[in-house]
Amino acid sequence: MFSEPHLIRNLARTSKFLNMKIALFGKTFSGERSPFFHLMFDSLRRAGATISMFGPYYEQVKQYVSLPEDLTLFYNHHDLQADTDVFFSIGGDGTLLDALPLIRDFNIPVLGINMGRLGFLSSVSKQEIGAAMEAIISGNYTLEERSLLQLTNPDKLFPDINYALNEVTVFRKETTSLIVIQVFVDDIFLNAYWADGLIVATPTGSTAYSLSAGGPIMVPSLKGFVITPIATHNLSVRPVVIPDNSIIRLKVVGRHEQYTLSMDSRTAVVDQSEEITIRKAGFTIRLVQMKGKDFFGTIREKLLWGLDIRN
Figure 1 (cartoon, rainbow, N blue to C red):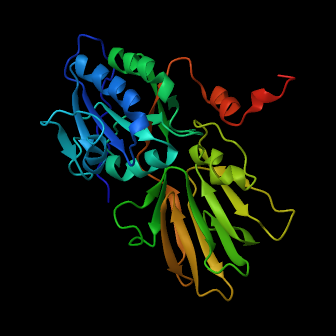
Figure 2 (tube, rainbow, N blue to C red):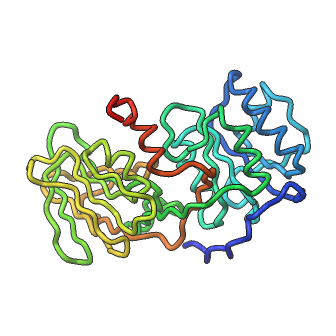
C-alpha cells in the first residue's frame, strides 16, 4: 500500500543554505496567534526558505496575517513535496496526528509547535518559536524515530491511511454493557478481556489514552507495544508490553453485533464477524527535537512531577 521509504537525507543545515523547503500545517488559527506566526514566518523567509502551506490553514491565516500571493499550497499527500526538509505542525498533539496522513512514508522530519496546553508530541511552545527557528535554520537539532501501528485486517476500513502513531483502540459501541475481546499475540492466546475496550499503543502513545487507562510510560526508543484494557471487569488484569515485531489479533465475541475501532483520531464501526490484525508499520515518523530537551524532562514538565516540593 505504501511505497518504499525515501532515502534519509542529510539534514545538517547552515545559515548559508538558502533552499530549505518548509511545509506549514495547522487546523485552526485565531488572532492571538498572529505575533507567534509572524515571528516564525519572517524568520524562515529571511533565511531564504521556500514555504508551502496547507490550503485550508492558509485560508484562515490570511485573515490575520499578510502572506505573499505566490505561496505554494498543498491539500493532500500527493500535493506535498516529498523533498520537503521540515514539516511544521502548528497546534497541539491532535494537529500532529492529523498531519500523518499527509506525510505518510515521505520520511519528512516533523516539528510540532504547541499552541495549546499539554503537548507531548508538539514539544516546542509558542514562547520558544524564536529559538526553534534559529535551530532549524542552523541545523542544530536532532531527530527521533517513532514507530507506528498498521491495521492489516480489515484492509479496507481506513483505505490508504490504515496506520496510527499513538494507538489502535477497540471499544464498545453500546454504552450499557461490557464487551469481550480475545487477544492473540503471534497466534498465541493472551487473554479474553471483559472491559469497556482495549488499547494497543506504541511507545509514543503510551503517554496518551493508554496512560489514562493505567498503562505504563514507555520511552520512545523502546521496541515494544503495550496492550492496555479499559475499565476491565477483572481487577487482576494488567497492561502487557510485547515486542514490536509481534502480530496482534483481536476478536470481539459475545452478544454485541458491532463494535467501534479507532486509529488515533479516525473512527469506524465494525461488525463483530471482523477480526482485527495489527502489526508494526514498515516506516517511521521522524520528530524534530530541540537540543537541550529530552523525554524525561518532557514528562516531568507535562505531568507536573516537579510540583512535589520534595523534588
